[in-house]
Amino acid sequence: MGQRSSGSWLSVLGAIVALVGGHLALKYGITPPIPSTLLYAYTVIIGIAIYVYLASDTRRWQRFASPIVHLFVDQDTRIARGILFVLLPLGVGWLVYAWGASAAQLPAEQRTIHPTPPGQITVRGKTYNLIGLENPLRKEPDKLVQYTAEGKTIFFENCFFCHGDNLDGNGHFAHGFIPSPANFVDVGTIAQLQESYVLNFLTEEEIWKVILYIYAGAGQSPRTWETQ
Ligand code: HEC
Image (tube, rainbow, N blue to C red; front, side, top):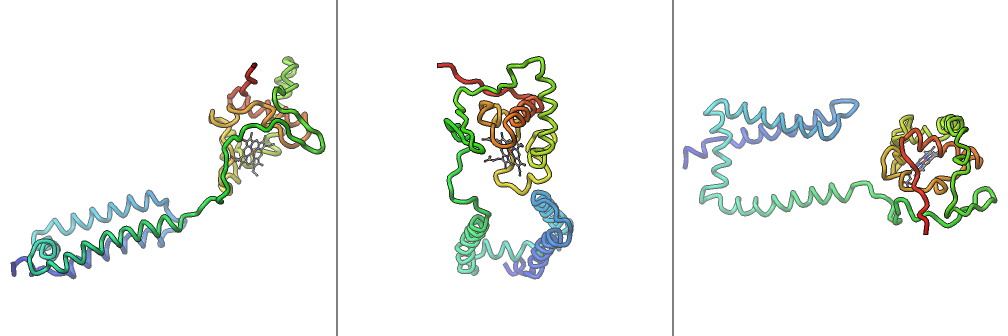
């Protein structure tokens, strides 16, 4: 027993300081900050390095391990062990709570992704019945390429800042939005909507043109009206 506890808590403390210090140096010592997944990967690597350093020399390992073994195994440390086993889960629980509680929260208001299209909308005093409404420009197939090209211009003048030049929702300003701008290439966005539902601002014809473009550019087809 005496042999075992001849180790030093200083050695354990040193290992902890090296690990925490390394983590903090990576976290605060590098600008711009590294992504948190990398930060934790590097911290694990530091931990492995400390372990290899300690384990590479038998006496060094004993100095490190013996106070820990003493604490976890021996009779005379029962009370300290009991206290540790109560405090440790409480501490971890508190950390998890603090981490979760301080996370940014979305506004409490319920948000519906793709709410059921309204029956009608009023834009600049004109009311559109959306149900069953088709994009009138599609009735001129010979001009569709030209209209789509014009829609592309409208898109780059009005929409690409947020929706991105690849229509993938990755525009310059995209990071400022929660939820982020819709990714039109994903089948979960405009492919789920009839074209009339995408009608919103600009002049009516510009709107239909930009709608033509976002479908063509994203390689999606609009949802068609279910015939009843
Ligand atoms: C200032 C940034 C911004 C600009 C500019 C912008 N959008 Fe968006 N758009 C968004 C965001 C953010 C969402 C996601 C909203 C959500 O999911 O609630 C979105 C969603 C959409 C949707 C999906 C609606 C749905 O119910 O899924 C369409 C369609 C759309 N935008 C079309 C356009 C068109 C067309 C233009 C240009 C005329 C445009 N947007 C310009 C930010 C923008």
